[in-house]
Length: 217
View 1 (cartoon, rainbow, N blue to C red):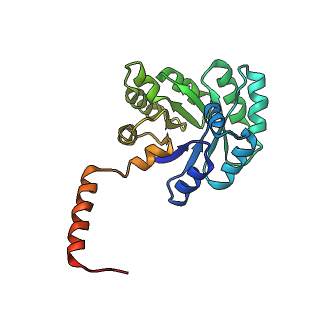
View 2 (tube, rainbow, N blue to C red):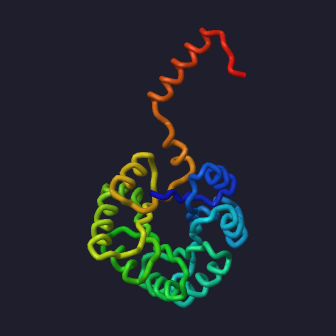
View 3 (spheres, rainbow, N blue to C red):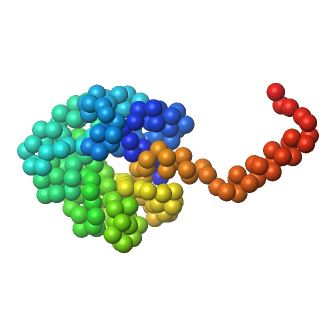
């Protein structure tokens, strides 16, 4: 499973990219706001850091304007994936951009039917929002599983990009189900390294090492 970093914070992206943990990046209007940066400027910088896809989201709501914005965003760098919402206008935009050879990430997916439409429209990525479904007492992982089954049934090449990830358990479950990609905040990815037994074992090793009175350096 590939890891995309869900942030527009350049320093966090650099750190994870240097460790080989950044296969791509996803941004959205909320993350751009949080960064305090100009969308075109920060997106171009991010594209220069990572080799993989960098999702940049349109903000128009009608298809004609979406298409204009999408084409402008696509000119930032060759690794841009234009992000469009899963609306009828978004699907029209997806079809047009995909026909031009531009990667498209269809976002805000909450049903298997929506994911099926996105695949038919030529989406490069479909982004089911796990956490937001969990928020309304629907298991977001069931959606990932349903999409995986449908795509495998018919050989769709659209990649499942598990999004709205809130915890390390989400990461594990997405990998077990077979999501192609998971996009998560840097803090969640770093937390995947944590385990209470690792901490306990390390504490014991350090106590024993201190008793030896030795040094390595």
